[in-house]
Length: 194
Image (cartoon, rainbow, N blue to C red; front, side, top):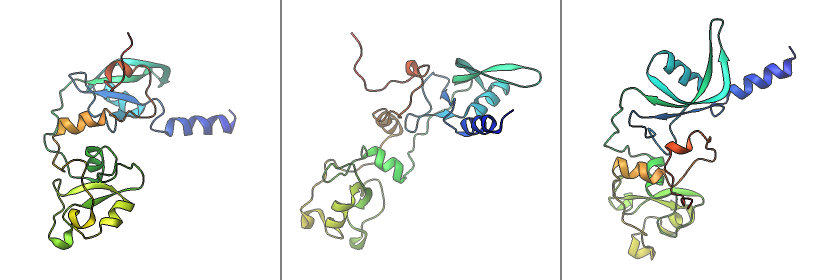
């Protein structure tokens, strides 16, 4: 066997996106939309053998062991329902998702950071209700001034999102790649064909 074939095969399958499986909860909804709940094919096959998931759709490719052959799962559904979290973790990613990855002062989507509406220097706390996504330009302009002093205004007031709200927000940002077998289980905001 030639070495370049072996190296190419190993590289392709080492990539977690190569033949990833969409993971659905027992109610046939994705565990998360953003990031989309995907498992590497190895994890999906392992879960099948541990009887934790059922296969809903498969790729054409197969994996083999000395005693068996299995088609690689492309969509799996959990056998036990995983209750979604009610509390949303306060993370930079979730904050950007809540604010739709745009500056809450000017609407720009580039070079995002976060800003304390009431600056920490003035007693502001780091919380859902006081932190917003902001582009570097607006953040530098505002500095440690109040909104009134800086002349900036918020596009919407900051608040803690509910878990379902954040999950629905993730639907607005489909990943760059969707396998055709996943589409029936994903409900993106797209125009329906007549």
